[in-house]
Image 1 (spheres, helix red, strand yellow):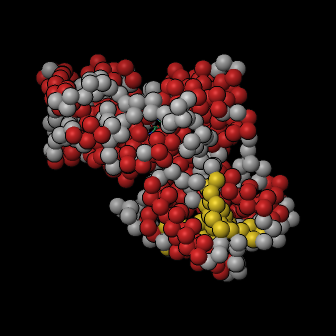
Image 2: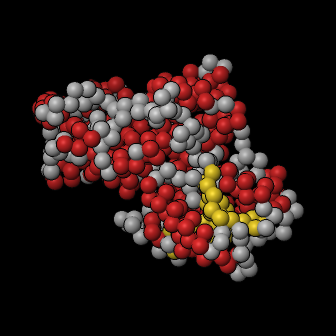
Image 3: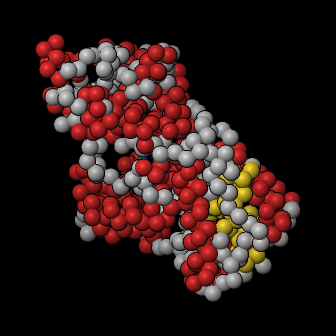
Length: 483
Ligand code: FAD
């Protein structure tokens, strides 16, 4: 009997749930990946770091599967790659290979769930089964519920229950290699498309410290392991190397969440505070997957319906200033440049720029969320939506609406010498530390001393924070929102 494993956001060949189950149950197992035109055609440009990242990771995966097969004495191994609408490609491929079942790892995004339903129906009509497996989350769907059997809406009790539920079984890797002899060779004449053949141009990905594929993920992990113990102290400072930078690998599954969580849990159990803090971040990831799965409407609506009555402004010039990194608030502008130049933004800065867009500029969180979706390498609907709704105070367990980040004091606290700011705003390189957070406060002599022409070299602030704050308080207050 034979099966087809359909890989999506799980681009690795070790510790892989669907692949393991297929290899254990079937004598011949094919693996396929589809460059899905339903997704690619909707991207705003033909030059996208994520497509290039996936492409490079797919090439590595093809080799990885072939090597795995060779090591276990299997005749073949490798990846079948298609370019087209995923549902049609998979159904056609499954039929032409004559498999009995298609296996995939589970996705929690509403569109992906709908796509998988369509595929399952079409396969069923052809007499082929479809099954999905938990792989990208540690605990998913209904695995962590309140005592009343309901999904959590607040993170802290969720994390407590999540930690209790996270046992050795959840952290055990799927031993793919021990069944690899069942890997089948792709049909003769298969070849992998180039990036150009997919209709995409190269980006600056190769210039970034972002190695691709399974090997890239392990390199970043090795780099992070010695730093994990200091994570809780260093994680909030964008000018320091305090975080793991693994998010894009988690997004595309080039690393297993079980491997990461097992490493963190082992150190956390020894009392390592950094590991405990990092494990909590992995819990946030599961939390938002769970929220999206239980409440798919959050993709477009506020988690708390009352907040859909917020009257957001429509100020095109403020929107342009935010997107164009020209707000006059250096930390916000440097963060937006980091996003556009690298596709990454530090977590503290995501909170700062999201708060700035919604609470200082008074613009709808959905606009910012879409902008991040277009630019973040690690863009993930669940985490991004959760983060934006948190910052906008519209989400579950969100920042209360009356707590409004001050972009200047955030900058003073988390980038005290302006190291991060200077890296992305070289025009402010000569501004002294005391003024780097808000150059608009400098007098004419101070400006002359560092050669900065405000409004020419660097913009004047587009809003006054204190006044913007008052407007936001009124905006929420009039809703009668009580939190
Ligand atoms: P680390 O600090 O090393 O954390 C390890 C991993 O934990 C991350 O890779 C990520 O998978 C997970 N994680 C950490 N924080 C969170 C969180 N708050 N929610 C969910 N998972 C988390 N994360 C994304 O992966 N994709 C997004 O599209 C995304 N959009 C965001 C938007 C906003 C407005 C905010 C405030 C946060 C967003 N995050 C998103 C969460 C977080 O900012 C990133 O996961 C983190 O910055 C990635 O860097 P890292 O891998 O070095 O993180």
